[in-house]
Image 1 (spheres, rainbow, N blue to C red):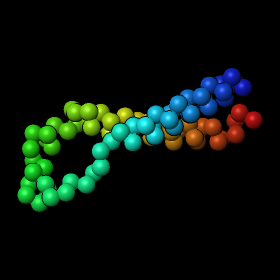
Image 2: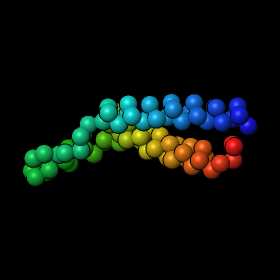
Image 3: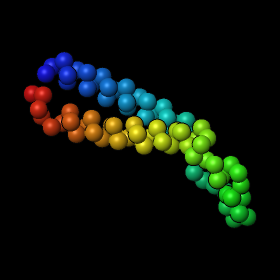
Length: 80
């Protein structure tokens, strides 16, 4: 059980570092004056899910869910 606990803690620390780095890599969500004139309907705005920004958003969601699950598992007290 101790080995599993150590492995989960290592995965948790790696997840925390990766989540922090990915959040810092993302651009701000402030659209500025572009949304007033309708510039959000450009090619870039429509295909944002396939871009680097879309990949960062997807990986942020995945790492956040992993963070929550690992937090719950490590705090259940089954490793004591």
